[in-house]
Amino acid sequence: MIRFENVTKRYPNQSRPALDEIDLNIERGEFVFVVGASGSGKSTLVRLTIREEVVSSGRLLVGGHDLRRMPQRKVPQLRRQVGTIFQDFRLLPNKTVQQNVAYALQVIGRPRRAIRALVPETLELVGLAGMEKRMPHELSGGEQQRVAIARAVVNKPPVLLADEPTGNLDPATSLDIVRLLRRIHDSGTTIVMATHDNVIVDELQKRVVELEAGHIIRDEEGGSYVPKAVDTRDLEEHETEREDVGEGSGPPPEDRPIGEVGALDAWDDDAEDLLR
Ligand SMILES: Nc1ncnc2c1ncn2[C@@H]1O[C@H](COP(=O)(O)OP(=O)(O)OP(=O)(O)O)[C@@H](O)[C@H]1O
Ligand SMILES: [Mg+2]
Image (cartoon, rainbow, N blue to C red):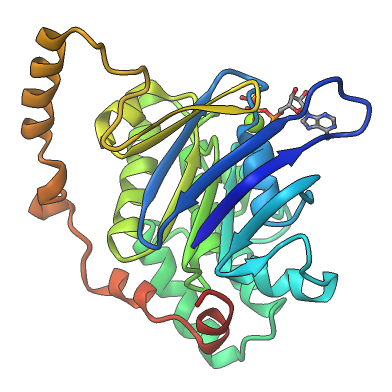
């Protein structure tokens, strides 16, 4: 679904590339953490994927579309299929919670009837029912990030990119947010999340891609924030831990998606067209 082929990204006047000949393939339905030190290229990877930046060389395919060749007029269509959330929430400060979420649908010309149905359903999904009329400044950081998530997923994009979405949140709130992302993932959304948060990466045990100075130095299924030790005794311990976490068996029943999340499975025709 997202494929980097020998991708290099150079910013003007920088001595080394931000991403240096990377190869990475993310399949539909995956949950991938992108980790690495500050400046290693995580945000660049996200910005390339929504065509906020263009690759310098190599190919980046999203849903089979080569983003370097994609005409500018098609970029809004790409961004409808790839929702994004950021560390700083980026809400519209003068709009209420429900207006922030509705706005994402208005700008793409969805009819009023669809908006009236989708907004409450999505606010319910992210746990904000009852807060529809609040302004962003009347919300905690965690609540603001939930609004941002609602806005990113209200159009049911097949892909959600998150660039350090918990960077401004305390540890407990961060875990709540990432559990919400896990529910959205469980309903079929592909998620790529750049993060510095070792607790979250270790809790979810998903695929971990580690960048260092623009290179992929690790790509590990069921990974932790730091690489697993090579000592075989340690490996055995990790195996046991992983069984406890039960990656294959999914989240505990109370954490499984409920009815309304299933709605995220239903892509519109545009999505099918773009992300075949
Ligand atoms: N707009 C830009 N112009 C020039 N250089 C940039 C630009 N954006 C990023 N860079 C450089 O590209 C490299 C990768 O930056 P990037 O923001 O992708 O890192 P990051 O892994 O997201 O870091 P952080 O963890 O601090 O967010 C860094 O060396 C950075 O200085
Ligand atoms: Mg960054």
